[in-house]
Length: 464
Image (cartoon, rainbow, N blue to C red; front, side, top):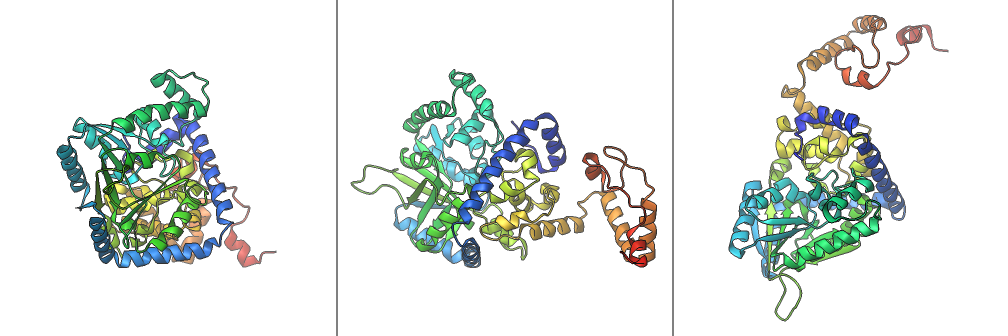
């Protein structure tokens, strides 16, 4: 499946709703379950104080990023790891290519990582003739389907159990009525062979502790632990914003991330990796390479408004609560990160022109800000990117003209009142002709019933 582009969002979203309505049902059911568990989990703690603390720690990180990154590099090297710096995707992939060539790598196992999706790691490796296998069950499913992930935490939530039954029947000959447990057992057996044969394991990183040079990874299946310890070489791609200052900070972030993502007090497995296996140790890789990736993050950090986006811990809570995301899932967004967080990350990482119209793919209901564990003001940042789009002339001409006309009328009470009176006699209905800017709204909704007398007359006369 070829990923759509952000510019195709309106058409791709409409196609999903029209052609695969079951996606809406699957995504809504899954995200509501995630969000229900989040509510229950947050009720067990003083969530507002935790969110304040997490916000403050991340703000400290982002205002001291250079020092903390240098500290992390020193500690990682002291632990025996090799540190690489990558300004962009090209640099990160070139580094991976050099490691693959130097070690004669032919088979790779890969833990779930949104950063590696952002960089295009799988396509890069396959282009070099390297076999790469996703090991997270959801990622494994969509890799077999040839699809990108649809959600930050649950990459296959848009697929039903029946979809998976048909997929596994095709690939492994399992019965079409196989239980989810039987499907998982089949995947486990196939992946065990991949782990044993792999030369190199790839992971992302949830947090990198500068104080000790510790990579922290959260999971629920155990595949990350195998991907990072069974192969002789481990490569971890780390976004530079994933730094935490101290180990004591890590305990809080592990919990708030798991609670925000799936409602668990903490992930089932937490791996803490400092470097390759030491002398006399039987477990772990011979080499650990840490690739610190910028790829637009310092540019975002320099934006005096949008920099707060870099607090994100990739929990997916904003996707789970978003009424827009629930309609289609992540694929129509055309970007690695979908939903509310994707709508404010895309303009920074791709460029505003390339990201259009994602900042407008929101009702601005504010629910995403209510659930963000690090208090990113997502609605404010959506408005920030919308204003930038208007300033750059990236919105449709008809919309710009209509909004200027509205603004001019709104500044003149007589003109505004007259325009409102005229609009009472404009015939329009669902799916039919509509006023400028309201075409998308009226395509799916009936117009409101017109009152017998306009509000300004009722106001003048006195409302009883």
